[in-house]
Length: 135
Image (cartoon, rainbow, N blue to C red):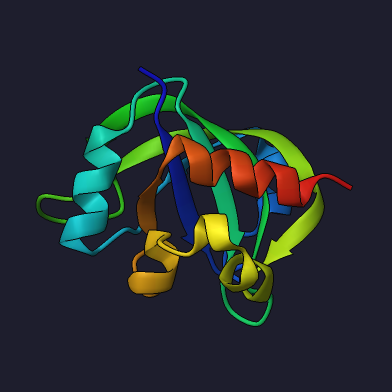
């Protein structure tokens, strides 16, 4: 069954353009237990919305899970990462303000647990983001 996710990245540390240039990357550095548990639920082929945090605060594009969870090579202890592959940029970024103003996205985890860096999206939230991103 297809699952949908949102991952957050500070574009000054690792941007969606970096993912585009590399093609595929290990999504390392997650150090929150809830986010780690979500990484462990990701399956190859799942769709991933990439959200730039920091000053930008916008969903900017799509990636796909290329490799399911495995031990994070940048961490000591029980931390995992997944590999993500670049898919495409959004026609236009979907800002946090737009997300907040869109009724279909009102219960999105991003609005309730803003500090979480990996979170599930419902199929409806995923489709609403794609619709907003057309441009």
